[in-house]
Image (cartoon, rainbow, N blue to C red):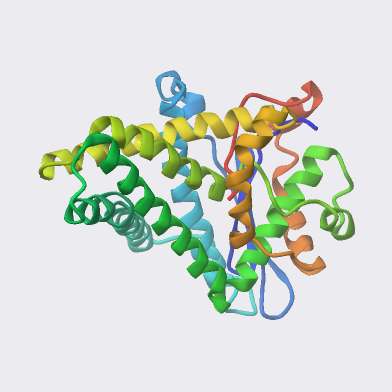
Length: 308
């Protein structure tokens, strides 16, 4: 099975797909028709060599993925609540609101997964480097699991999780060279080694090691130092995802990615055929990307895109 740089994300009533130079969103409107958004997109890591270096490219790709994800979500929210097509143009105010949403989300994430676990661990009386690092890491992992459990039990998210599963299945089918029909796509696994859920799990695990080495934060500057480590941690996790995508057939690699893939049981649902059809429609818009077609002829690539 070739490793192809196709990633995606579930959105409201639809799926976003991304190839090396294109992105597309397909959304099922209330009247049953499909709404589409297509736009060219090439990662800055492909254009600026310095940003394409190992680890650095992971941090850059994470922020690019966040921006694309918010754009796709905003479009899907508009399309999923109206029967007829609308404009794809986003106002300056909308762009500012999108950036503000990402910044607020990042701030909440840093507070919940970096600062709060350290504070609670200190309050419990753990001060030595190893003990503090392990307990701090335990609370970070606990927060991650509780977050996923909350999402999985949120009834309004059920269909989004179904589209998440459909997105994974469609990418599996493309990589396997299988027919892109709803019935064919449905037969594939809803779990994928390059899923954003697995990436986040890796971030949590790697942060335990890195933060244990850094030691207990004593003041605001130390907390900021931990926050500054997060892009590096994300970059390391990205490189592992990259490696696992290329070598998933290796038994050792499969064993290492297994825990992260199990968390996808919480963030995906088995899709119906209609969801698979929407994922295929989105994939159809990017699969003719010339860069992707060339890589398919060569049997794969060393590049990676998140499968969220």
